[in-house]
Picture 1 (cartoon, rainbow, N blue to C red):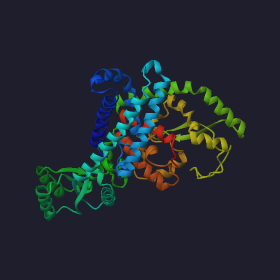
Picture 2 (picture 1 turned 45 degrees about the vertical axis):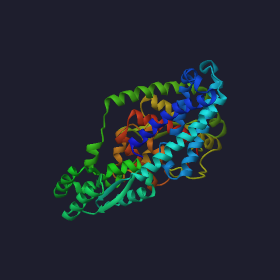
Picture 3 (picture 1 turned 90 degrees about the vertical axis):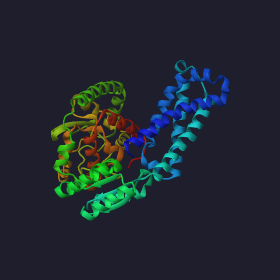
Picture 4 (picture 1 turned 135 degrees about the horizontal axis):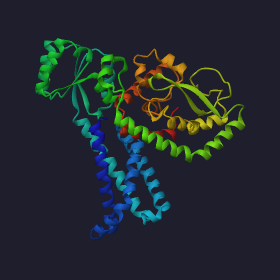
Length: 437
């Protein structure tokens, strides 16, 4: 879903939260006491608003997949409201001195109104996106055009419809485009960059712009639809234009947050880490820590620390396989709960990795992955404890799956920001507690 659509959804949800609170108090106390009751409840309910918004994000209510059908949408909204309502109720009882309220009835009315309004708001937008779909014309022969077209047809709620597809842009197709712009409201022309570099084609595209047609590269439109990059179509020129190896302000802020949060979590988790180390040492032969060489920023190797989850000295493939016999019983638990990754906090504090970024790969696997086009661009940034690929794609067990994850990693490298890092961390919370095999 495009950024402005997510923004529209988010702003609508904020208005819905305030409206639902007013509606609940109106039903409970009547119009005469609405002002006083609203003033009493508004402050204590602000953390509740935050809980609902975070839950909506974690359960993909700002992602296009939940708009696929009315049933999928209703299930997602219902689950989000139930979870947020339960968490909010618990907060009211756990922290009574802060909230000074125990609003069982008010919270139930509030949640019920949120369910109706949040679903209705999304159903309305879904219908609106479908009805006002932007006509799109493709120019080029890239297989990614077929991939995008299939996704657009499968997901009309994206708000696009395929108006035409030209393999090349000759005089006839240029005239057709002008006619489409004048009579059919053509608004978006998606062009294969290899064609745009041709002088004659560029001139034709230039002449179409005054017809109020936005001309965008295929890679940009692909990113908007899939939130990954079309790796097969990217040239060295694209990376020169789109990848910033240094972002001083962002890099500084990220490092400060890494150190502060890393130290805090490291100290908090010391007792749990000691128990985990003891469990590993007592249940299988060998040390508690597993120290492995990984590829870091610019491809420089470093030693990554994890709690050992496999039998000591176990060989075998570099990928972890399903029902892998090398994993110990305690190791399976540690992997399922991600407790095996706690020692990586030390790597974060040292500066080897960050909280967010492409996952640090085994140097042996890196030699395999270097066959992929532009794989080195993954190392423009520090690797991370979690990343965009991890929350959008399953753990890779083959070269094909690793190739697919690279598309998400390069999307992160291009679009990295404090806001995207925050979204990744929030989504990782959901990832930890759900099945992602």
